[in-house]
Image (tube, rainbow, N blue to C red):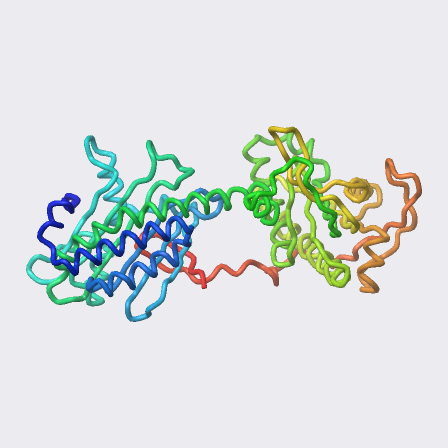
Length: 453
């Protein structure tokens, strides 16, 4: 069973004045940090140091919470005294239902909060050494083998009815290697400060969730701008950028021939393959338009050539990776897709456009229209990647572009010279610029997590 939350108010009357002062100082500090929006990693690291100063014999500590993010499902922060450093881990959303999670003290505490008349604040204490040792969770055996003698887990829920926009709650664990474990004073200090710390964590979690969702749905740079206050309709700026417009060739027959979930799986695979080549090169995916994708690579005048060449690298890598993707899908009996891609560069307006109650952070201008018209030539010219004369001139003599002569673009008065990117035949192997994920480790969540430096 869970341990009842300590009746802190009754214990305070008998505390040593010095311990009482530590509790007051910790709570005042926690509230100030929450008001300042201190990042959770820094907040928890400082908490551990302050608990040591207050006389709590910390040896190992952990804090973790779920979050709203399409890729990451939870964050964890591990502090170890001998390292004197904080380690951040991120848990893939798909791993949140991992069977190992069910064997953790935290999963047990979560289930306890679902019982009738159980508050959203529960804890569990286990002795890890001596005759009272109780190692009924795998993590407790691991900690005991490493030298821990006492363990406290604590859960604090957020909001009413689990409002996910605030974060669902935060879990903590604290372990000591002191021979006789935590004292009663130590437990009072911990239980006294964790509500204030949790409030500070909730404030930062809400901010992080908002930033993450804006980045996921608007793009990293637009999301950051909107979160920072760029919300006024008609507020735009002129930027220079490479425009990237991709579209699946013959998508309608594919959508007609296959069930909806299969089509969505195809779109996800294609869009991830395209976006993966842009991420390490500073590309910003602005939107997915049905079966199309619009992205930009902003540049300053002095970096135009370098940016254009990065865009060519990304296009070549994406096309090779798409061949590999299609090969795997074909072997699995799944639908495949050919993608047409156009590159152009020029000045665009970048900012908020739309109705008073529904805005879009995007790019507009003649260059945007032209890149879409160039992409429409890919099928009749039987090429996968086409670029404008402006882009070709900016990229310089790379030896990778072939002129296809002048062609008429729909809605553009004069014919324009169009170039094709020369591509190597054959499916792609592993990408040279794939995301660096870090090593897989086990945390107190009980599921694989990615270590962040």
